[in-house]
Length: 261
Image (tube, rainbow, N blue to C red):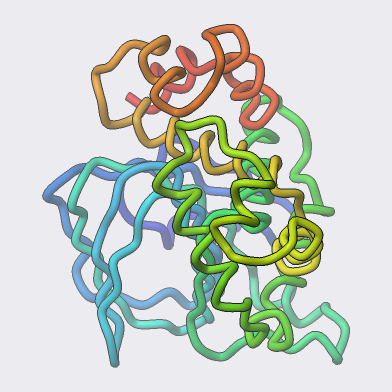
């Protein structure tokens, strides 16, 4: 199991390994690079802060805070870090993946999501590190389920993409479901139902997750005070921000900033 966590290059703050799984808490520095390399195992990356370019065999992509990436085993890639960042990696031994049911077929190519339910699963895994609890297997199986081809191929309606972009830009404001429906040009019931069916959460829950990931990125990369970050991310006050952040990560914003360096 030592080899599994050691396949992640860069600064590893800590790692937990058990039963064919590894959680690796990794920090990256602006301007650094990871030369072309290959991982023998499959893994997810949950990006909590920062951004980087990932060069793949047939394409390049920019990876930013809030994204969740699936990497199949044997993927050749190269990373160039634009800003200092914080990632959580969930790695799998081949035997662990082989133990999955035969009807669970994982993608043979890389895939990604932005925010929403996949990001929430990453926060749950990160919280387990900070509260000294076992790796939450429910979260592991939930994120595996998201990787099924049917989930990857499910395209949201165009209006939902507009709403998500709007939320990503206006998250600091007091957004409501009614405003989202007006922005989309559909009935509020359609908005509510689509969030639950396609994202696995309510409109309000998604908004909170968006604010948390924006705050996490700012705590890592900016010198603004915790109170300033709280208000800039749409939280009503410092205590509300601290309580919500700790519920999601297991750490207070100040403790996260200290740990993230």
